[in-house]
Every structure is written in C-alpha cells, then in structure tokens.
Length: 319
Image 1: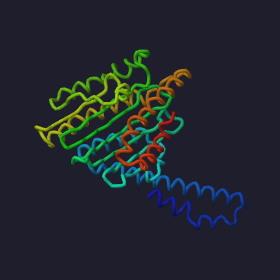
Image 2 (image 1 turned 60 degrees about the vertical axis):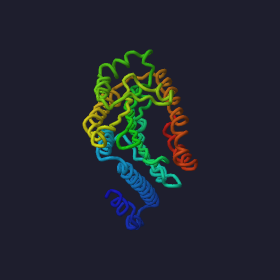
Image 3 (image 1 turned 90 degrees about the vertical axis):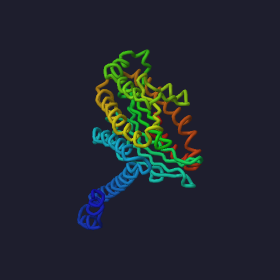
Image 4 (image 1 turned 90 degrees about the horizontal axis):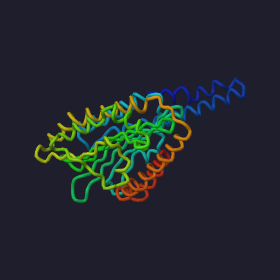
C-alpha cells in the first residue's frame, strides 16, 4: 500500500505539472524529491518481495517454519528503526541452480550507522540429493559492529530428512575469553546459557554434533549448542514434537539473551579494542566465505550463480 501511495502522489505527472509556476530551483527540488521517492519506493518494493519469498520456507514443516518466522519477527520488531531495507538485487535475494535442483533465498538488512548492528542475515537453501531426499538449511544470524564488543547471534537448522536434523545455536564470542574473563562471566555464566544446552542434551534423541571444519568449530563459544537429532524410532511425529516443545523455546530464549545482554547493552569500546574487533571479525568472516560458503555454493548452484551471490555477501562481510 505504501508503494502504491508513493507512486501515485509523490511521483505522479500531476505533481510535476503543478510546479510549472514555481521558480526553476523549486522545480529542480521537486524533481529531485520525486526521483528520490521513486528510488525509495522501488527499494521498498524489492525489499518486501524478497522478504516475502524468504519467509515462505516452502520445503520445511510448519513447526520448523513457525520457529524461524518468530525469530525473524522478534529481531525485526526489536530493531524496527535500526535496520535498513534489504537492497540486494532480486537475482541474489532469490536464486537457483541451472538444473533447478537447488533453490535458495538470501535476505540481508544492514544497520543504520548510529547503531551497534552491522547487519542481520537470513537465508534458506533447499537442495535435492543425488541419493534421494533433500537437504534444507535454514539460517539466521546477526552481526554487531566494532562499537559493541558483545558476541554475535548464530542460528542454523540443517535437515537431511524428516527424522534427522542438526541444530547450531550460539552467541559466538568476538574476543578471546581467556584474555577477557569478564566477558565469559557477563555473556555466558551470568546469563546461564549453558543450561539450555544441558536441557536439550538430556533428550535421548540428541547427540553432540561436530562440524567437519576445525575453523568453524574454533569460532564457537563454550556454551554453543551443536547437536544432531535423530528420531528414527519415534519418526516424523517425534521430530516435530522436539522442534515445537524444545528447539522452539530454547532458540527464543537464547535470542532473548542476545538481545537484552549483547545487542542492546551499553558497552564502552576503546580505540584499541575496536581495532582488535575489526581484525578478528574480518578474519572470521573471510574464513566463512572462503572455507564454508566458497566451497559449498559452487557445488550446489554452479560457478556463475555462486560467484554472483558470494560477491553480494562479501560486501557485507568486509570489515
């Protein structure tokens, strides 16, 4: 509705004709306003279309979808005025392999310059497996800039079938917790983050998950939830029960801790610490691009599509 109003009134031919009796400078200002409004309307339309596609989650269960939609909505509602619209091109917000066996969406919203939010990234990837079945990866992460030294938020649900999934849920540290023990106490001990991992691992279907990437594992916090859940005996119904009654509340509680104690906390960061954060953040983000996305995307989507998407991601990951 906002896009239609913008186009009809701010950028209509009538608004330009009505300025004919004004001065040339006034006409120029009106033209510039119309052009800026047109660009803004176009950007919002692209943002809304991409967001709608991202939130469809067409290949996962209703419980899976509801969990991720709630997390996204919580983040967006909390940072309502602090996030810019997604400005990614349409062929980056939604893309697929040439054969159509792999489909994906990408939704990135940068934070305003006067906020500690660097950007929020959401995505889903669906890939049909050669052996049958499919792989579905749902991701949501939020990154802070160097004005705040608190951890980042990371959430991944990786499903390779209706009765098997991997959950990665963490507040990834941005400083060495050995050198900064106060951060260990503030973000991990005082918030009792480890109780959520302990509660989940009490379920008989839950086993620890170890990423094959040593680099990825080195980024994790001591309270990271990295688990593999298999419900072969209980089947699909048991998996949906675990998502609804365990993963859903735990994920929302961890996000709430991040929002209250990390993203919205007042942190004093000196110049030396800012330089340290920029260097460390840059190394980690480069490793994610090079070793994680850089190796998997070309296999899933082909080099042309992968290069286009990775180039767009790098613009946000560059510190």
